[in-house]
Length: 353
Image (tube, rainbow, N blue to C red):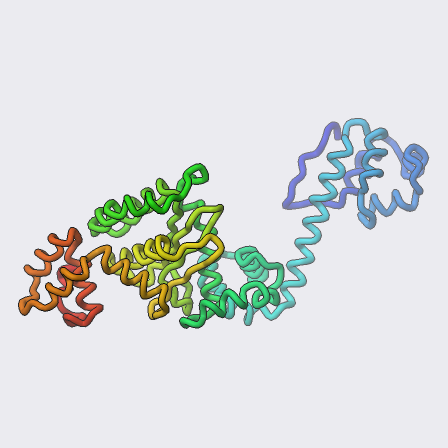
């Protein structure tokens, strides 16, 4: 057994067992080792049986006897082995929790759908996602934050999980933008470009282009499916000193997706503070949400032009198309606005969507 063994984390044995194999190869007994390194034979026996840890002092003395192996190897192996033992003990402890209730409360089936891992392992992954060590800590960490959000409806666990999942997706979905400073003026100067991108009614393609534009402006953009009962449409927060916009895609249409996105751009230009998180719900009606809604409506369609258009008697497919061209948008946006404002029925002009 010359040189250092390669540690296999899938099957680690106590460090003492490896030391014992080396001693046997060199023909060194426990008594011999005790005399050579001036440590009691009893302590050496406990180390070899895995009952006592390999300490820095022990490893430094041992490398003077087993010359092929540096102290760092024994210490690294010991740390890795002890970590594995601790993880196994954690799994056993977590398995005794009321995992069925926890899984229901924290939407395990939805978050871990398709993953072949135990409930205990799902619990560990959820704790990592939430950045807490015990589910008992959830309310202490997120209680006040969630209460502010839940004034507008929804389930706090679902909302916090969604926000956490969005954060996990940031670096997966976006380019590296650390060196690109965010500047509000640059966003305002590019609003016309955002509008041009919205006119591509192939939603996925237009959103990918929008993300690239956001990244060039120092903004992260994430699309992540909403968790059941989160009731969230979008959010604005900060990640690594850059604005981050999250969109849930709760409403699947092109018009609603883009309205939600521009709504968050409105929050960015009107209400952004690095230490705040703004969450947009479908039926939210507070002042900031009203202002962001107004921003989004005016972004797509001039408010005065819209009033004039709605006052005309003949609203038909042709006039909608003509008005959309006039406003530099697409008919789907106009139809969605008219339906939302109940100027037309939700069953009308859907062929233009």
